[in-house]
Length: 428
Ligand code: BGC
Image (cartoon, rainbow, N blue to C red; front, side, top):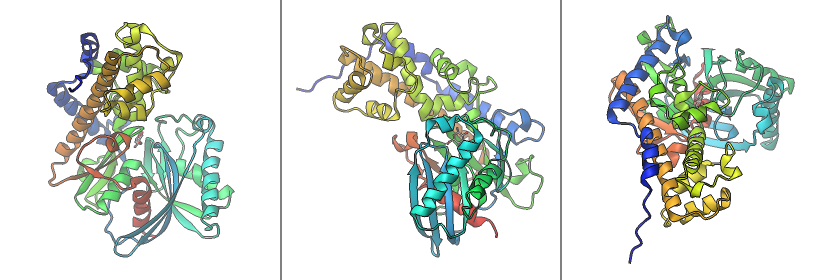
């Protein structure tokens, strides 16, 4: 006899209705995003645009002929990594990578400690690999909104995700890091400043020349794409046909253009975030915020007595306690909800969890992940339509993608390999 799964309750279903977006709304969101992208590209409106469409100064895709040894720093995603990448003839590739902890207090402390910590890790990395005495060009993958003014020059316009380091916004992050590296006499020269989306695109384009868009859907979200140079009003030199544009679409909605689709729970995620009012799109789709959204929906449903008979434990109330692995495990739970039950009981210490509670929680997770996927698809489609090129391969990376079944080309280590490829494509 097969056991019928418990049904979610009508009350929870009704509560979640505002999170379900119709096709019409999604098509309208595509129009709004296109308008924002055009604002970012236009000279007159760039300054005030929510979606900045920053120049990357990357105008050539890799040829596959790149060679050399490069260091890369990858900062801003789930992991902080340093890599030594060797590109050999015939696309030979070797990578040595180490992941370092990034202490929470350094993410929200001062600029000096922040950059010195990165330099200290580079020093440790070089000595671990016994390459202290060698000189290296370095690619810095810094996954934050940066107004770039050259391949290795860029001013941080605002922090994102869990970072809020004082004294960096408005400054050139390459100069700050170079100073910290030089203080320790590390024999590295920053050649390229790259966003993870550019790394993702470059890494895939190395294998697939049709690759034209790079998307990250992980802790944060963003996309870059190859734009025709005549559409890039903010860049006067038209001698090359394209430039990769870093859209910074995570900030879409920060001018109020998504207000009509925000739910009460979205507003709360925003209100308790490090930068209320900013990165609204990112707060609706990326892992870090979607987890918070799930937690807050659970709290609201418990307050309304739709869940856990109204019990709200201290753990459930605490920001950041709903981890990405809970989301993936619950969404895919095919153990008659035993895994979901264990998470609620063991990690949130909720008493008397019922099977209906588990079904309701799984439904909350599914609805929120589905909205994230729909919004992301709408955003990707906006770029594909805008580019009107065929065929287009989309490079994609990030935890949300890795843990959900879509058919796209996984960017193999974009922020490491792709960053090295950008560094390699710069003429010495
Ligand atoms: C940052 C982007 C980055 C994205 C994905 C966002 O928070 O602003 O620069 O590409 O996260 O890591």
